[in-house]
Length: 185
Image (cartoon, rainbow, N blue to C red):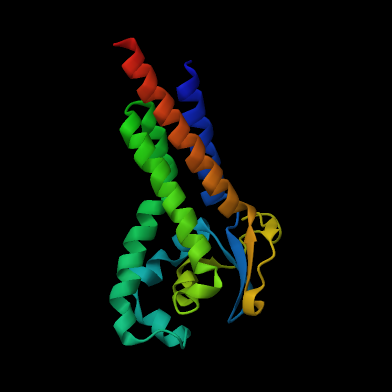
C-alpha cells in the first residue's frame, strides 16, 4: 500500500472516530451539562427537518425567523457529518479526498466558532448538536482539552481537536497522492 493511501485512511478513521465516538465539547444547556457531538446532531435530525417549531418552543433564543436558518444549518451539518466518508473516497480520487478533508477542517472551525465568545449570538445554533450521552461517561466519550468556560458555558473536548488532525491527515494524503501522480508522468 502506498504511503498516501495509508495517510488518507488514517485521516478518515480519525475523522469518523471524532464524529461518531468523541464529544466535540460540553455546554450548559437547559437540562444541565450537555454534550455537543456528531451523534447529538444525528439524534436531532428528526426535529431539525420534521418539526423546526420544536426549537422555537424549547429554546427561548429562537424565533420564527430562525426556521430557515435551522434548515440551512441542518443541510450543512449533514454534509459535514459525512466528511469522513468523503475522505475515504479519496482512495479512488485524490481531489474528492482533499475536499472531504477541507470539509472536516471547516466543520472543526465551525464548532470552534460556535464555542467562542464572539459568537454569543450564534451559540444558540450549537443547540442543533446538543444531546445527552448515550451511555453515561462512555459514548460519546468526552475528554475535555480546553477549559474555555466563557460565561460558564463551554469546554472544548478531544473530538474537536481530532477533527483538525483527521482533516490534516486527509489533506496531506491527498497532496502526497497528487504529487505521486505528477511524479509518475
